[in-house]
Image 1 (tube, helix red, strand yellow):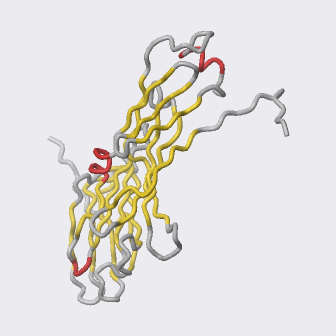
Image 2 (cartoon, rainbow, N blue to C red):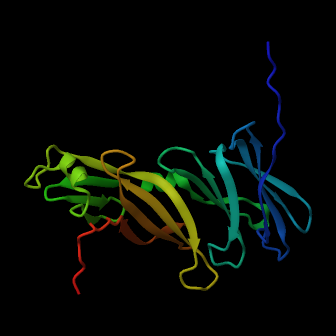
Image 3 (cartoon, helix red, strand yellow):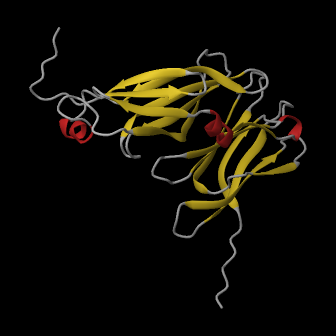
Length: 245
């Protein structure tokens, strides 16, 4: 019987900053077990060493395996103390990501953002209509967006619509779970908002129609929706097309 070799956890990402709130820099690390001959990392764990006392606090993550684990420190709540943002790629074709955001004041971890809760809250309906239109309905804020497909490649449109622009059959698309979460200081006040990306897909995952962009800000208790936009993909202009002006 072959014995599987044991690998010790190692630091896979590191940052320093005051996360405990005492004005002294702390060491913040992600530890994980790397897979031989693969970028896949397992047993990813948050470890914080208090810069003043040397005390080490370990925080296990619910989703603790994936690719390219990383962390960054920013103030997301406006209290002047760094929070800890963790990102892990799942490696799937949809570019789906794992994200956690922790406050660590007084060496007490508090989960401020959980990607799974976000994905459950932000749900959408994507429906194709006649005349090259796709409607996206955001259930969270009861808002509708209309995507125009008329500039898409003629072969692409012919698979979906007849010569009169009528749907050949009913089609529903979907919106992927969170694929990007970025800190953005919109007000240049040192307090960061979260910009969340979710990819809009048509008939299948590779049939990308654009992205839903949700900006989230801290209201004192939770991250709430500040604004929402839909970004669409452009189409290449045919060579014989001349832009009027």
